[in-house]
Amino acid sequence: MQLTQIQLDAIKKQYRLSPRETQIVELILKGVDSNAEIAKNLDLSTGTVKQYVHVLFARFHINSKTNLVLKIFESIHK
Image (spheres, rainbow, N blue to C red):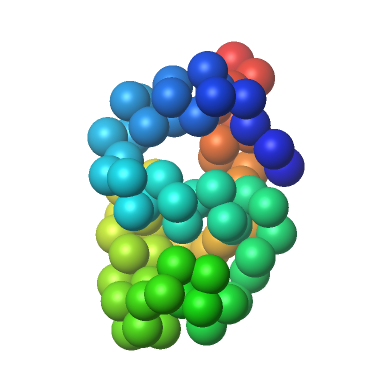
C-alpha cells in the first residue's frame, strides 16, 4: 500500500508518529514484513526495530503488522 504525502501526514499527526516510526510504518506498508529486513533498510539493530514495532502496536491498539496496515487503510478511508 502506497500513501500519498497528504495521507501520510494525516496518519503521522493522528497517531503522533516520530520520524523513525513513520519510516517503519512506510516500510511495513510497502510489504517489508520482517523486523530483520526493516532493520537492514534503516541501518538499525533488529532489537531496536522490535521496540519500535511494539510501541506502534500499542499506539495503534493492534497486535500484528497486518492489523497495522488494515488500521491505516481504515483511517484514510473514513
